Length: 488
Image (cartoon, rainbow, N blue to C red; front, side, top):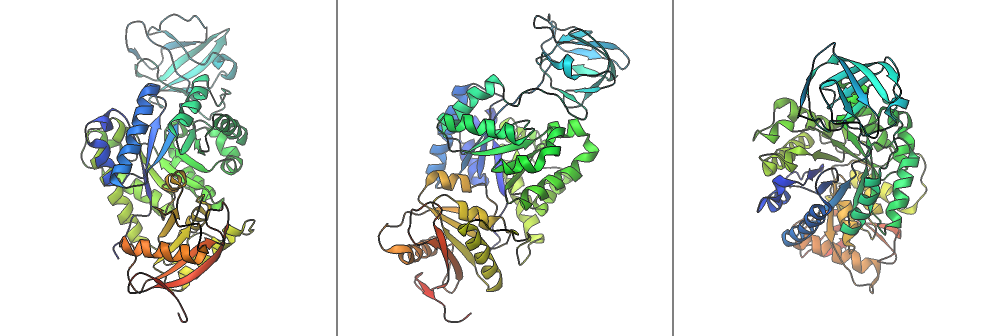
């Protein structure tokens, strides 16, 4: 069989994907999950895009998840009185934390974070506009932070502020984030991304608000603060997924440190059996160009080879000139990287401790599949937990996750190696009957052919959450009906 892409693609929706027919084209090009960036647009825009996504995915017959991405407490300068200003190296410049700070000038501007003067210290380096400009703090006088321009340039309204090395004490969730959590629940988001997470407490707070809003969405921790690196293990454990947010993280820690930290975060997340996403400027040139640079191709491929579950497009699809071509390029790069570095067995060590039956079944299924020439693993799953455990072992064997639950299928769209399939077996007939019907469905869809060996994981009772406790090794018969195997 031809190689099937294993790494998942996330694409950000925006004005560019609102163009007639573009949403269908990016889904057909290979998008598995769409991102709705709560930093931009009105609530009505986000609800409309979510509804259009559901309708388009249903029309195309594909399972696509929705990731709602909170803005987070982004610290920004305020607006200027007469448009952008030019800062020159050596010039003085003041950041004004007063609530009634006047519109900015070439010498002074207000800031959105009114406690910045309490966090900043003389000698600190403050980075503006994703590090394009930098200021050295010289002294703090009441609510005014007096700085000297180190790296100058044009500075316009609402650009971000970071402190080199991190350490700003702003709360993880803003008032806007709290409103947007309720919005994510209304739209039926499958994942909620928490920006600037610093600790497990930040993730737990977001989870409580999300559950209070009536949503069962999974949580994604965005690693983009320097202090998050000190608490990485606890943040991973408190989340369902982790996103390597290379923009603000690169600003806070310095770009030279970023490649090694990206690998560390991916490795640590996978070792703790959670989902990991790599993001930010992966194909940035394709905002304008119809083809990526060679450096971008290598960047995406490197993340794939490191084992990331998903790679993400941001401005490339939200506001770029070629959203569908950006997705197609991402798809082709992922597929080629996987084909060049496809191993025959799992690339991750087995967990040292097993606490759940479905985890043990997944481990046994993968060990059996890797040693018996199996074509596919068929996981009958209600919640998707078994499929997630299977995907953690990073084997080239495809995992067909069969579920009657649409939310579960949409959530599983993010798991590397997992292909969700709608499957609603009759509740009577037992597990063996359900397994037979599942294999026959995959045969009818052309995903399996006669003679294929498959491992099927299931439970004694279909439709029971967390009930996976059985695995079977079967061969696909000439008419698609599975047969028990008396020999390997």
